[in-house]
Length: 54
Image 1 (cartoon, one colour):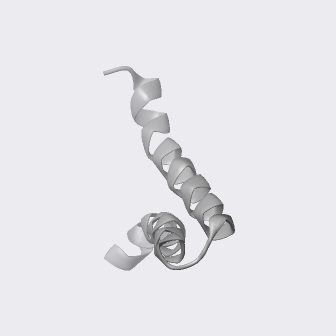
Image 2 (cartoon, helix red, strand yellow; image 1 turned 90 degrees about the vertical axis):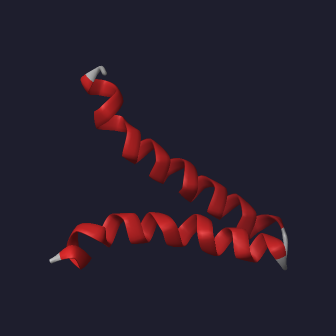
Image 3 (tube, one colour; image 1 turned 30 degrees about the vertical axis):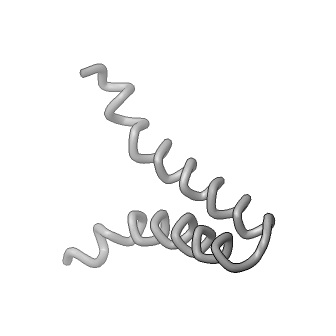
């Protein structure tokens, strides 16, 4: 596997989840709110995961 693929894979996933969360927060209520919570909560959890492991 190419080093660029492994280096940018997790940041790309975090960016995609954040974009989905932000767009769904703007689109509506109900199910959209749940998708926004997931889309913005998972990147926050992934970003703090190394801190939580210690």
